[in-house]
Figure 1 (cartoon, rainbow, N blue to C red):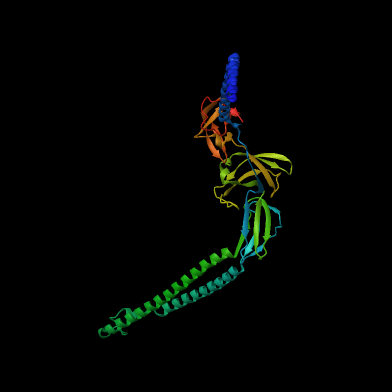
Figure 2 (figure 1 turned 30 degrees about the vertical axis):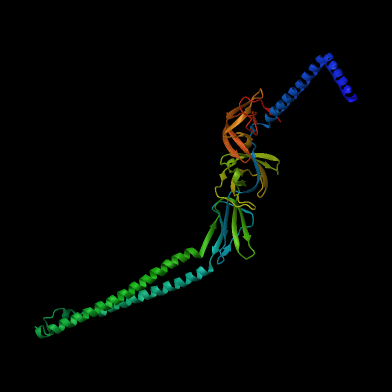
Length: 384
């Protein structure tokens, strides 16, 4: 009973308090609602800001292609001395030679022996041929038929001998056949000897050209005779003109083109030389540790470089570069001066993780690196 009376009194007091402070209670309630609304608005705004916060990158000039190569002679003549040849030369190592200068003589002893054998056979065939011709001439003289046998109607007394006519004609026919047979045999022997002689003379001409050969310098350069451990020798001539020889990976092949400018740092004289790429190979070279091939290229250099010198180079590139991730369907979002995004078309090509722009942007233009589904024309972009 006492508890009920106490609760009734408290309720009366609360009603009395509420009536007296009704105004402040309403104000407080409205304040709480306002705080909730403001908190929600702030949360939404922060989410919007988060959705419009992007990494920004500026379009800049393409980074030059860089690497290193080696200085070489622009041409090298190499001739390995055959094992069956003997080399004779009066030149010393690293001696300067001129184009068309004789740099050595090769002789082939085996070929010389064969030549002498062929020449001996030619001499023998010529003797046989002369002997056969003499024999044929004598046989022809001995086998001449008596002129009296050519008239079958006369005998030794000049009288007609009809009874002997058939015998004389038969004898004449036999003599003529024998003479013709001997002449044919002699001619065949002569022809055979002549064929053998012609064949040996052809061999003589071929061997004569093989017995000895002169090695001639194909261009101005430096002579060197290389000796190998297995006993073989090699003649080399290194051209005086020098080149940078380097390799480019498959993925960077488009950055190296014939006629492109290249700068080379000469550490010997501490100077930079300008040149142009003179050669780019289309034949692949295998590389260790990768399936991707490399390709050789070259550029001429001046005399201040040393053969064998390692040289660093740069090949300037045209166009602008931006991150490849900023390009979607050949379009990028350009950030305007008022921080709003505007989609523009660009043309160019992929190069690794970069996109090389040939048209559509200018140096310094800011673009969104990773555009997402929330980004569209007119959206205000917040930079990370």
